[in-house]
Image (cartoon, rainbow, N blue to C red; front, side):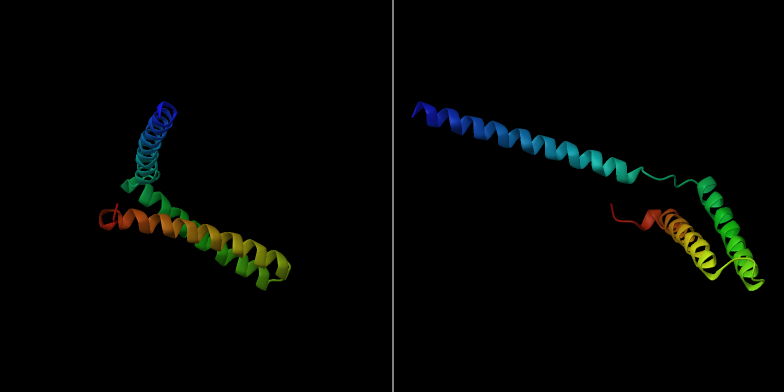
Length: 104
């Protein structure tokens, strides 16, 4: 019975350790997510400026393509990259604008 008691005690200790580590891990994850992006008005203005710049860049790419200065493949590659950047910035801007409404 002594060996069984030892094993039971070790299992209990391991469960306690795992619970503690899981709680710490969850808390660290929460903190990283909560504060992983800048929600200041300066960041919002910067994102809006970058979105305008990217939109102008995309317009220029369209003009360059229309003038046959780049191939269709280059045009598609460039505009996809710009679209991807616009999408990422739009998502970040949305998080900033709607920050107070987010469920944590």
